[in-house]
Amino acid sequence: MDLTLKIWRQKNAKTKGEFVTYQISGISPDCSFLEMLDQMNEKLIRENDEPVDFRKCPVSFDHDCREGICGMCGLFINGRPHGPDEAITTCQLHMRKFKDGDTIVIEPWRSRAFPIIKDLLVDRSAFDKIIQAGGYVNVNTGGVPDANSILIKKNNAELAMDAAACIGCGACVAACANASAMLFVSAKVSQLALLPQGKVESKERVQKMVRTMDKLGFGNCSNTYACEFECPKSVNRSNIARMNLEFIIAKTCTEKETVRIAGV
Image (cartoon, rainbow, N blue to C red; front, side, top):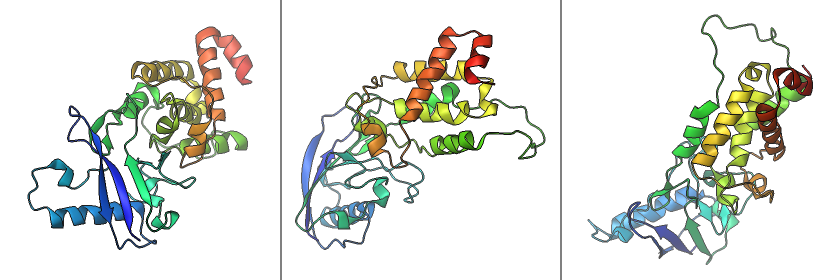
């Protein structure tokens, strides 16, 4: 396959970026999108010995496991997070999804909360700060309890596992017109709120995580559901409704009312 690549190049966080066009040929339809970028970088290295122009240097992009698990490989490809396929990360996207002669536009995530570091690299530490604010359960160390000692309803356990499938890639933010992180935050709230272990700190958790999300500059949810559509792990938008309920309960209800609403 012969392709034209229009890639966002930006020397660093302080300089102005631009699209730069590259030509690449001999790409196998069976290789992954990241392998194609590897080949393009090898081509740039061969053709430009000690380049002065940063646009002739290899393109910087994020990746790690290349197995659709870590959530690192966030790229905006032809106007879609992770490219023209559903329920995949960029590393799972294969070149057979494109045609010979295609022009492919590659950008980083676009969000004030995800500032560009260089080229296609963005700083996603905002997600880490949200988790640090409350996305955990405090427990005393000691012996591990028997797996069946805490009874959990099957439906709750399955919903919690579905929410926990979120890998924090940021596709929901990139897909949202408001750069909202509601799907990510709600998934992290839900995976704990649905389980008995997470009930003790539920009020404090949701308030801290939502407060941190707003402070970091993420936008508001306007219910377009683009986040759910582009999520590589198909995290359901119902988690947003659950987080909103948790937040209202935390803000307005007494302990007695909370127990009545939760049905415990």
